[in-house]
Image 1 (tube, one colour):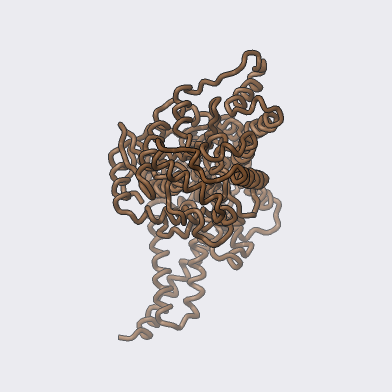
Image 2: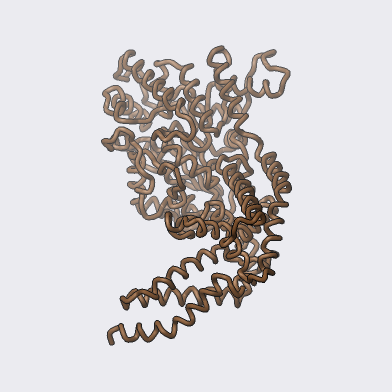
Length: 625
């Protein structure tokens, strides 16, 4: 979508917790400016947008008034469509799937509207101009426009990821669910959750609806959405007496929203049932104040509980009151009102009481108790990121001996009379206790680093975890250089390449891709160039042995190949790999064990060079003049 990158921004150091996000939004002009532009876009009518620069911040606001097909154009009941249907690699980072994961899905109607905006050159050029001129960009929208804003922000983040750490904030006002749990997890993996905030009013039913066919085709919904759209375009002329539905119709809509939210709240993490799922932060607003949550399970439960404090009479106007809530939040500046004597002496209990009061649930005993349990669950799931990082550092020191033993094993292999080197010694190992012990160490280290990646996915570590702590990049790089060759050896030793295909394309674990990205970022930022790390005894291309295994297969194929074109193809691949390997040696990027007399690379090179003199004449004879 965008062609240029942001400069350093106001919120580049992203928020460690949802509370920080809430405090930031309530104490800066961002919410007021975002809503002002959303209102302007709404007044301009269907499919409109507004682009404006305010100081050093650029704003893009999408109208909440959208074409009706966004609410029901897809005849399927689920309303979820694969995000990769967007094409052009717009969301490549998000649509990559890992084993056992459901595909990333989004609301089909919102995706349809996103395509519409994506095709508008006027919008694209204005966004490009903002990214070029401003320090930061806010992408926002009311109602369905907020969901379009979320997709737009994701496309900008995906594009800027490869260029420069983006300074993008997306704010939705009363926007419905966008996608499934896989989308939420993909955003967490990219560390983008703190870039998104959905402002939700206590009694607004739209953010709590899935907008499926059982709703959008009803006359009740059609009448409600028409009234909302008219009021958005002309807020000063809104007259509730003009609303065409009866009290019974309002009760039906309210009951539908409660039932839908109850159903969504009961869906747990990891469910394979295709269901809408919260993403990013949710800023809940009531007349008493606000709280901000980012734990998806807690968000769903809280949305359900807050709606239960409402009534059908709120169905109409609550979705149109975000301007009032924003103004109130700005005036309060996080001020929360409490009745004297209601706060517990415990600071923890006091903070829970403050949160319940901000939600407006403190006076409803049953709801308050359930909401309190919900908040406690959120706190339990959200251990402080810095404490988690410290815990990992301690745990790493405890497993350091396992890594040291692998280093010792490598030295033994390099000095062995068998002259097979590190990789081939492990791949061809027998049933000795030494090799079994080293394999156990490999598995222990894998579990630790997979745990690190898993904690990052769950947003349980500082957002700049790998940048702010020196040991993270250093230790992950050493682990990758030392252990990935053993993982490759085990992959081919166990025959996994015959079941899944070669390692690089089909077997490489995600943690190594992440560690590669970390190291590459450090090389670029610190301008290390081709400087070797302190681990000079290790081959810098950790996939080198996987490339050797592929070259061995090419060599076997070329021996029995008779088709001239295939012979040329295989010859070129073999020559390319040989040249690549020689370049590594010349640049001192390969360790000594690669050239061990009986290593699989040395044996391959010897055989390939002997075969060359035989293959070349055959190719010359077979090819036409």
